[in-house]
Length: 76
Image (tube, rainbow, N blue to C red):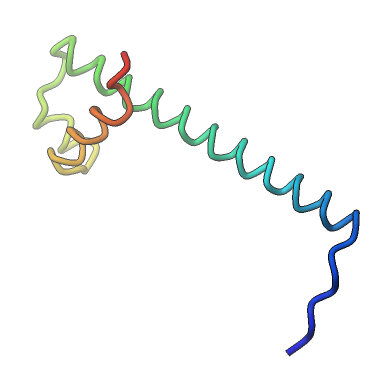
């Protein structure tokens, strides 16, 4: 197995940039989930679709939809 090289200023900076990119990605994913599940909740609240229709259309279980709505729209 090849031994690892010691960290240099460049590798430390590169790792910090990768960490920042990962944090930005995670934040974008969280925002996308919140937007998506808020749209689902809005359709349910407006009674445009029933829970059964939503779960069939999205191909999720009713329990999954319920948990995601609680997780991503609790503060709305």
